[in-house]
Length: 76
Image (tube, rainbow, N blue to C red; front, side, top):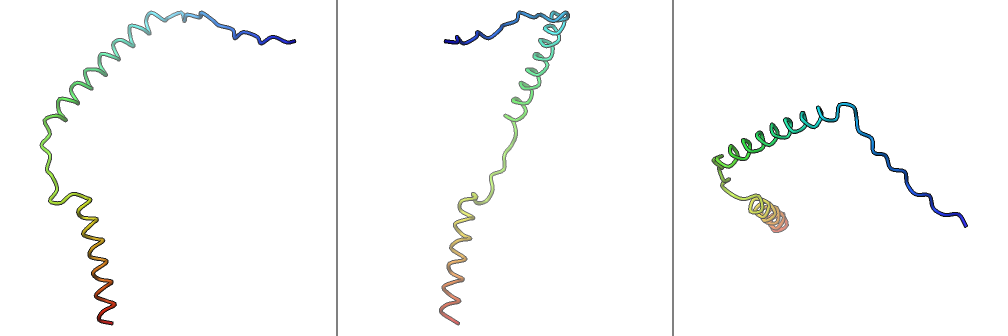
């Protein structure tokens, strides 16, 4: 009975759109240069590996707690 209305579309162009495009390209190149410099510096970082990985430390902690529990039950 009642048909669905079609959404309105607008072809609005701001008055200073050309200037914004030029400014946005300058911002894009600056951000791209920053990203490139960031990638280069992070790639050359010397990483110090920890003595033990986190998983190993957690496993040792759990084993230590189990041993403490067993020893407490045996001697008390």
